[in-house]
Structures are given as C-alpha cells and as structure tokens.
Length: 249
Image 1 (cartoon, rainbow, N blue to C red):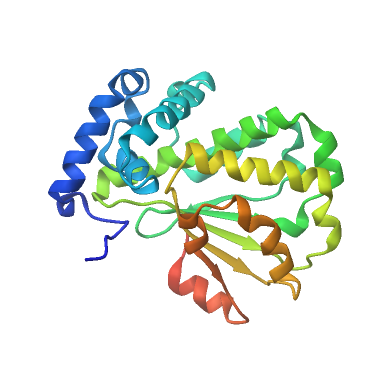
Image 2 (image 1 turned 120 degrees about the vertical axis):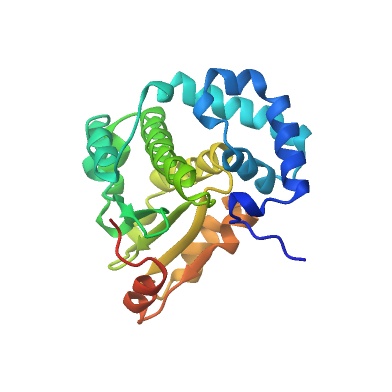
C-alpha cells in the first residue's frame, strides 16, 4: 500500500501515531521551547522526510528548532500572506534584488509562493548583504509561511504545504553568475534541512531550451522528495496552474 503524504488527521495510521509519539517524546525538550511546533503534522513531516528514522531525525530537528528560536520566531505571529511579505521587505536591504513572495493560500490552505527568477539581479544581490543575512531572511520567510500552514492545518485537519511557482521567462546565462549560484545551492540545502517535506509541489513555467543544463546544476542538492515534486509545465501552464492552484487568496 502506497503511503499518502497528505493525510487527514483522522486518517493517521497506528504506525503514524506510534512514530509521532516516539518522536514527540524524544524531542520534548526542544518542543517545550517552541510549543507551536508541537503538532502531529509538523512532526510527521520529519518522519516522512527521513524514513521514520528517529535516530537520524533527532539531532536535525533539534538543530532546526534551535535556529528558529535564535531568530525569534517564537515571538512572531502571522495572520496572512500579505503580512509575511510586508515583514520580509522590512528585514533585508537586498529584498528588492530577490523578487517573489507569497501570493496567498489556495482553497485547501496550502501556501502559494511565486519566484520570478529572471527578475533577479545576481551581481547586485551578491553585493546587497552578507550570505548569512540572506539565509536568515529566507529561513524566517519560510517559517512565517509555515505558521500560516499550521494555522490552516489546525482548522481543516489536513496536512498541507507550500506550492512553489518558478517563472523562468527570459532566462539568460547571467543568472548563472557563479558566486550567486553557489550561495543559492547552499540556501536550497539549508532550507531542505530545516523544513523537510514542506514543499507540496514545484511548478516550473516558461522553461528555456537549456532547462536540462540548468536543472543538472541544481539537481545534486535536491532531496529525492523534492525532485519527485517538480513539475515542468508546457505552453498550457496557465490552465495547469488554474487547475492545480486555483485562485490564491
């Protein structure tokens, strides 16, 4: 039987419940410091992301929670995607060089994130601030989105996530500026480590002819779960997005 990654809370199996209880007990100290993380689905993501191996998960989840606490995320509450976007713009001077943001939430409560890669300015972004500052921004933005998802999960009883739309229209080789590409790959690695199994789907639209070459450069840092969630859309991408994302609100 194939396991669904997005069960309803009432459909959790005995195995799910046993492993969640085991992980909750093992990481009780960290959860006490960041109580909003103590939900069935927050813990289930780690279990699904790491094949239910508690021994492997424990140091990783403890480190992730420590990072969120150090960034003051326990003192931040989010009510809407627009609130997240406004908060992020005020945190990082280089935000204007890194276009994109939360578009809203779909009818199920999944967060919709849009990234317009070709509108970035790699050389300017590299000079806009330190790498650590960029990492801090992206981790905080993702956790703010996660707060919205946890809120929706509590209301619907459904395990949700983020649907990412990446627009590659106008792609050119300048976007592969080596110093920035290296930082971007490190960032992808870090975000996957802190937020396993959070991405529900990644839609790539307006893909260039050299997409195979570009993807080959990024693929090594992507987890298998992330790779499995990537969908390359063709000329009918508008219809596909309407069907799979709907009207973000």
